[in-house]
Structures are given as structure tokens and as C-alpha cells.
Image 1 (cartoon, helix red, strand yellow):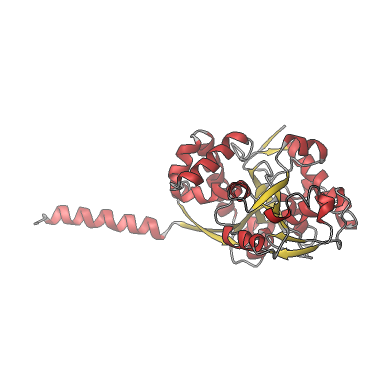
Image 2 (cartoon, one colour; image 1 turned 180 degrees about the horizontal axis):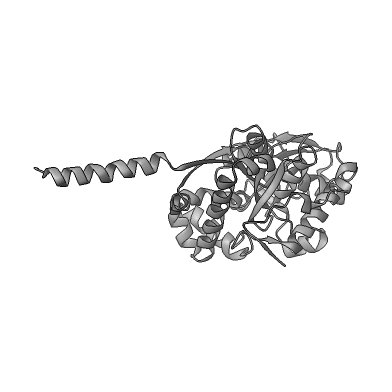
Length: 338
């Protein structure tokens, strides 16, 4: 096909500017536990709806076994940001004053204490797990992950102190979690949705305690803590303010998109077509409408609950007793609500 010189020149010009725009896209990276955990689906959705490109950026998502790993990736400059449970970030903040929270992402904690199917009838309460092997996504003595804090609080409330059970790192992938339960390598574990529901359906394990259930939330002060938040570093915010502002905008726009679309539309964008997986997630979205923030704003009430949970889960930690969550909240670009 013959093209006139002027037409060819115009076409080349368009291609040049398109390539230039792509090469000049702001590169942003984030570490997230996963993949596949419902808590972090908003991050997997970003590129699917073009929320990063709309802001002239290109987001790279790095998956990790757990929140502690994601925090380490961010703190060692391997990624720009991390998306983890706010209590995990608070634990890191005790040792590193650079840690800051920039936006609310996953409002409701849906941690579930699962027990392997073979123990049904034997383990009926948390107290029955004394001396058992308990699986965690990741385990750290320096920076306690959110699931680790949840586990220790639940067990202490159930009369089982730290040291009266054994913890085993199982990662955050369906294959590793189920293998550890099926082989008896662990007797119970702290799971995320929708994996917890799938374990029940496939008779791999049963639910002993669900943190998202209203009854559980009434019995555990601070159980409505902020599950997932965008985490960054104060020193990098000061030197890369444009990148930080852009990332917050990307998160806000993604959450706004999610809140204005049906669960089915969200799953279509995520290219989740398995009937079983879709059924699990749609039921989860509808049962827990509070699971995701709709706008990224920090809730003052929820921050108070998060502080209560954190201090309660850190009994014996002197530095945690006087910790105030406001010291790490940077809400300039998202704002607050009651």
C-alpha cells in the first residue's frame, strides 16, 4: 500500500509521540501479599482498568508471601510502596519512623482461623489448639505481620499464651496452605478469604473463628481495624512527592471505580472466569460490602479501633503501649471521615 509522504510523515509523528509518552510514563512499583487474596484485588485491578495510565504512570506489582516481606521490599528500596495490614505497618513504625500510611484500601479484616478437617470434633475452641502447629502467612519476631498479631490476640483471649503452640510459615498461596493442612504439617492456620470459604467447600478445613463476623467483632475490641493500607516512607515522600501523589490518585480512582461497578464487572476486568471462583468472590463482596474502601479516606473511628487492636495485641511490648496511630497517618491527598 502506497502512502503519500505527508501521510507517512504524520503517521510516523504519531508513533513517535506515542512511544515517547510510553517511555516517559512514571514507573511505580508496589509489593503486595498474594496473588489471589481478596484483600488485595484492588491493586490487581489497577492496570486492568488503566487507572495508572490515566495518571501518566505504569504500575508494577510484586507479589510476596506476606505483609512482613512486602514491608521489607519497600523499606529496602526494592519497591516504592507496600500494601499491607495497617497493624503490620504500625509494628514496623515502632522501629522505623519513616513508615507512613497514605490511604485506606481494604476496610474490613476477614481473617479466618481454619482447622484441618481431621480434627473436627476434637478441636471445638481456641483452647483446644494448645500444643498444636499453627500456620501463618509469614512469621517475624522483629516486625509482626497483621495475621501474626491477630493470631496472638485470638489465642491469648482463648487462654493459650505465646509459646503454648508452634507457628509454621505457610506462605500466602492456595497450594501451600492446603498442602500443609492436608498433610498435617499444620493443625490450623490463619487464612484469608476467599481461600477460607474454598477450604470449607472442599472439606480441607473448617472455620473456627471469622474476624469479619458481627459476633466476633463484638467480642474483640478493635476487631474492625483497617485491614489494608497504602504504605510508604516519609523520606521518599519528601524527595518524590509527585510519585506519591500520583500513586494515591491511582488508588483513589481504582476504589471509586470498584464502588461504582458490580462485583460481576469487577471480576470481568480481573479476568476471573472460573464459575466456582466467581461464585465465591461475588458472595464475599455481597456479604461484606465494607470489605473495600470506596474512596481511600481514613476513618477517624476506624483508626481508633486499629490503635486499640494494635495495643491489645502487643501486650508486653512497652513501646507499643504508648504508640499513637496519628503519628504515621499522612492524609493530605485522601482526607478523613468520621
